[in-house]
Every structure is written in C-alpha cells, then in structure tokens.
Length: 386
Image (cartoon, rainbow, N blue to C red; front, side):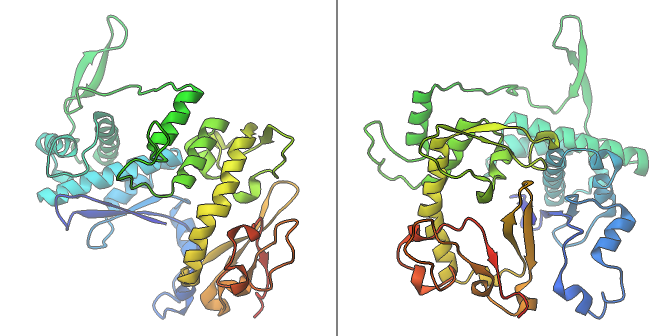
C-alpha cells in the first residue's frame, strides 16, 4: 500500500508515504542477481526492528532520509496507535514538501518557515487544498514531536516557538504554539433526528431535492454505496474504520422475521484491539445486500471485462470462515501460478437459483446476463496446483 501526498507549491516537492509490510513476498526478490545474496525483507525488518505498518518517507527523487525515518522507527512512534502514526506521517510529509518547495532544509528551518507554512496551509490562494485551523494545529503537534526527537539526538533546534496562554480553568496557564491558529473548533457536532438524517442522505448523497426529484446538475457517483455506508454508521454506531473493515463473510444471513442482528467486529479492527457486540438493523443489512447486487456487481463486471484483476500481481483470496470466526485465506501469485482469476475463483450460486453456473464469474458468458444470479458469499479455491 502506497499513499502519495503532494505539495501544490512545486512539482518537485512531493514526498511519498509508504507503509512497511515485512511479511509481503515478492516474486522478483530471489530472482534478482543483486538481491539474491542479501537477507529477505522479513529478515531485514527483524534485524532493524521494523514493524508492520511503520511509515517510511521518501523524497521526490526516491531517496530515503535516515534522520526522518529514524523518528518513525523510534520507541515513541512504535508505541503509538496506527492512527497516530498515519496522522504524523502525513503531517511531516506535508511539512517537508513545503520546505523543499521553499528551498529550505528541514534541519535549518526557523520560525519564519513555520509562519509561511501556516499561511500556505490556511490562507494562500495558490494552494487549492487549504485546510482549517484544527488540521494545522494537528500538523504543528506532529512537527513539534519530530523536532523534539531530532533535537535530543541530532542537535537540531525546534523551529516552533511557544507561548504561555490562559488555561481552561481560572488561574491556570498552559503552553501553545505561537504559530497556532487562533480559531480552532474543539467540537463540531451536529445532532440529527431520524427525519433530519433521512433528509441529509437524500439531499447530500442521493442528490434529490425536497420533492424527491434529482437536482439539476447533480454529479454524484456511487450513491448506493455511499448511502449503504453511512446507513451502517448511523444504524450500528460503529466507527469509520470498524464499519469499513466488515467483510461480506461477516454479515449475517438475511432473515425477514428479524429486526436486529447481533454482530461482532474483528478484534484487530476494533478500537483498542477489543471486539465487542453491536446490533445491526435489518434495514442496514438490506442496503448492503442491495449495493452488493447493484452498483458493486456492475463495477465488478466492468473490472472483469477490462481484465483488471488479472493485472494484479498478488491476490489474497478468502476461502472460508471457520466456526471460531477466523478466516482461512490463500495468497495467490498469478504470475507464478501462470493462471487467471477464472482458474482460482468459482462463484457460489444463490440459494434457490435454477442451477450452478458452469463458468467463473470473471468474464464468463453464463453470468453476463442478470447481476442478481450470483452472490459470492465465499471464494472456492481450485486449480492451484496447475
């Protein structure tokens, strides 16, 4: 997984944020004559203490800066949550990209650079991606943490000046950044009753006016997917990352006699790593199933016709879900197996369908007609020993 964050000030001011995956195996590593005699990626990671998901920042020219990446390999960042590491990585990458665009080195930055960074992030009309004060404050916190770490080890001075301001309680004093934004919303909560929420979905996601007609010039895409997702958040109370991590295999079977379903997210995806029970309304399940057999199935068909799945060098196929709620998966390297998706995945027909399709879902003519004839609840692995 690679995320790129670009600074609009200059085409040369791009820093990339990569995420370490020591367990990943690449087919070309052992075949490369230069890399063949070196340790594997997993061995390198174990020797240097690299963890899964650790950020690695690269400059626009592809070079790694050890001083910068040493911060993300420090004990403080290793003990931080995945969300904190991600937020700090993006904040530091934006700051470094801004300095590159301004022709400044990160170890020579001063208060003027911080003031210019704040202006560029919030006010500069040349920046098409201006942000609010809360985002800038988060950036300054991450940048300060980076320079405090670098100051104690590399002797680099912190460019963020601080000042004493009145605290939240009478007679107290707290410390803040001089370049900190003056207006920062501590909370931005909007309370909606069910009727207000339904109106918000119709207008904001479906593009409908108050009479239920489509708004002229509406350019929304994937409205069925968006509505199913926000309905899941509203109906279950799960967090964004928790609801986004739910797999199709984890959804309960549809039962018209039930109003709610008792579910449980994966512990690795739940906050704090502790799974808990949550209740899913049947309306939420119905929306997800409708999206699966509607827009999602159509998107899969388009990808199959364009052979996009065949161009993926590595696939993680879900084989089945065990009784103890674990998923059995198969790592498929199409270039090594010399096969296509059709040879690996055979769809499972919906209960009650007339007969099982003879061809796989990827490009088979037997399933080109009628999106609702197939519901891939699981993937059947076959032809692997080819």
